[in-house]
Image 1 (tube, rainbow, N blue to C red):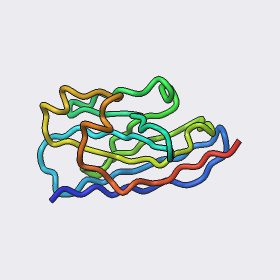
Image 2 (image 1 turned 180 degrees about the horizontal axis):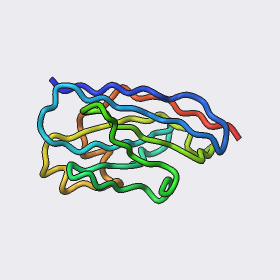
Image 3 (image 1 turned 135 degrees about the vertical axis):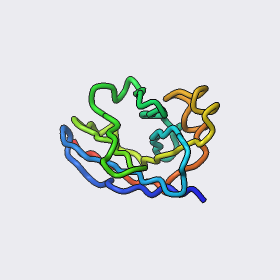
Image 4 (image 1 turned 120 degrees about the vertical axis):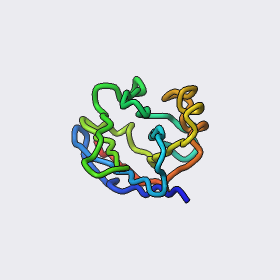
Length: 128
């Protein structure tokens, strides 16, 4: 059974940095992984996605500030978030799909709906 465990959320000041980690267990095949965020009462927003070939795509709102980093430990990836802004405040979720057809067909904008396997979420709060 595939499980995702997230960690690394917390509080930061505007301009600061946080790093989220996502550990995937039970997955032996290639998969794509993404992060999306959600604020209560607002629509889910895809933030970043990394494909099985290592390429990544970012939402315009985070481009140049957020980076997906492959950890030295297998099945662990980080979302490095730099130059944080108050509008980055949200609950962040990592998600994966083991279905490569889904991976090929998704994008950073659609990953929240397409990637069905999700972590428990971690809160990020950025103060001005």
